[in-house]
Length: 562
Image (tube, rainbow, N blue to C red; front, side, top):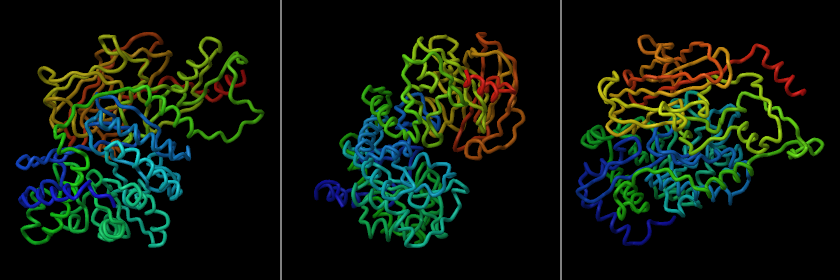
């Protein structure tokens, strides 16, 4: 394994450990907020920041991305389809540059869990069902990041390959299968790429939570593989105080802690938690902070959006390399524009830029281009385009198409947002911004002067439908919400609400209303939200389904025949 740098670095770490009180060491072992660790100001130990990863460096914004936009890269499954480690390393390098624009020291990836079932909900974040391919790409990605001095977090260790009951399920796997299938990508990330961090999984391994599993975290990862970095929990994935610390979990995330802080000090006082384990975890945290250069640059940098042309080019090239053409009967592809008079574009995602899988992988992308928009730009006025939805495929209604919205000021697409430092939209707004997406999830930082457990927000947009007919509006939230159309309340999810499965099971059911709208006519949509009833996560989503004809499949078939 590669040490921090020199013997002087390790000596500095030991000197800091010697100077720290037990309480200060314990402070380092849990997050302060959603994405940061606490400083120890007395000794000049700085705050450390991480950011979510799978599609891009999101920054402090919520699960739908914050006000500061980010580059949206192809997900892991698409990168694996390139079969090109060089491309993946270049993506890692670009993501390191993106992480720096968000002031982060560690990017929370790569995700190297195995595609055990095609139905697993987070397969898109991971690379492959093949441990060899996954291992090669894990190494390439990690090297791309860390050569730019941004740490990787190889995750989720281990056997986190099912979303069903993901916080409690036990992955029952024998030793040979574990070593041949599930552990190799993690081992490669440690032994070959010297990853700075490893993230433990939510699930149990053979009956023991992954975040307090002595066999995997200590015997295998740290002792056998020689890992000298930090083992951090997945977010809210710590399940105990003393067992987690004693068995190898160095950092509980996020903060404020559920199991450390005062609980850890109590466990130390009673002898249940080991002081030697505290020293070892604090040593690893100091090593990580030193690797990131945070001692030399202790001030967290403000987040910024940098839409770089070279990143656009790389995103396009990587996505193209990941496309696999299975059949090309009669060599009809690529289509020659000069030989075309009309094209039929069919499908529920044709006019929707469905480019992200949600959750940790969601970012506020610099830009989005739907398939229809891309084809239209490619053919110009030379080819007539016809479109039919054909069918629907949504579980929840789709979000508003950004190109059909504009702020009330009329100068840009999206929603004008007013934030209030209370739960009742009372008084003057304390912050104003513009967001493009109609779905917001606040996870940690919200806005200046806004606390997650005590705020409300009003989102307003001018919507101009592309077609006439019955439009279905829908809202869901974790917290209270209601929707107004031209000042008239059309959906009440505020005074009465039903618990549903939105927002990881913490949110309400989707509440809908049907309204007649005319193509080309502008309508003001106002979505009001209160954090009343929300806790760790706050969020609201506004959705809209345009008219869908009863004979939509027949219409699509007719368009195709023409």
